[in-house]
Image (cartoon, rainbow, N blue to C red; front, side, top):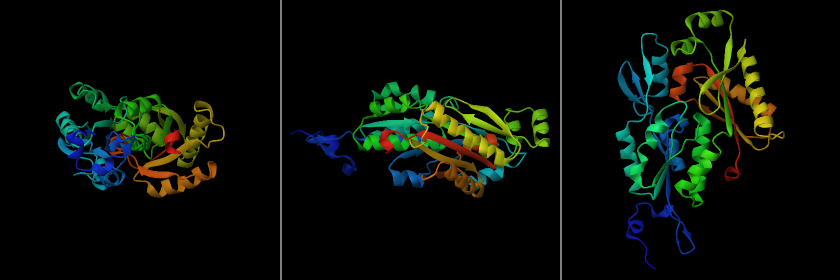
Length: 314
């Protein structure tokens, strides 16, 4: 039986599994740091992560490479420091694809939601040169929901699914999740132009806490609350409504619930207790929100997400 030489020379032959006398296709899973997957976690999982770039007073930094979370929040809290988000440079992305294709048959690239960044469209514009070996997923997710898509992609790859099959599944199920967020302060929504100074001042005076939502394409206002506890309850009501009405599961058994936060781990741990009381007998992941979201909502924010648990995760 003839086996192509490129398989013999692959550095990590153990990633291939025998099936029907041949080798299963080997697919790399690549995402960006908006997924919340750290470089250390990526190595443990067997996926790859592009660090997101930021400009701080016009100096370029990369998330987790030369910009840690504590340093980021220290700079974010300063009123005389300007922070802007960016996307992976085309050259860096091409270099990563070329590097991975020396080892893998094809690549699934899962960037943050196309509605929140131009990363997805910029990457999609590059793939014609790769003859189908690179599949860019318009997954419409970010943070822990994007992370879940990466895990689903990894499991499918381990089962021998190729990049096209994985892309089709992830795009077909892209809307099977919700994110609700409440903020600790209105200051950062004002800085980003999502609130006028007058509205932010009145809202702060009245102690209003907006509850925001991400349903795929953009960050929108969902509701208003007067206290953090009230906001947390509104978020739990919202995911319960989505599970029952959007996703048609009144038993709430077919979902993965996660919590994300911006420098608010203790509150997130207390919130997890409330989540488990409302939806018992389940694990609830806590993860920091990615810096690209954090710079728009600031420290002290909490989020809860719900995602349909597809068969691949059971």
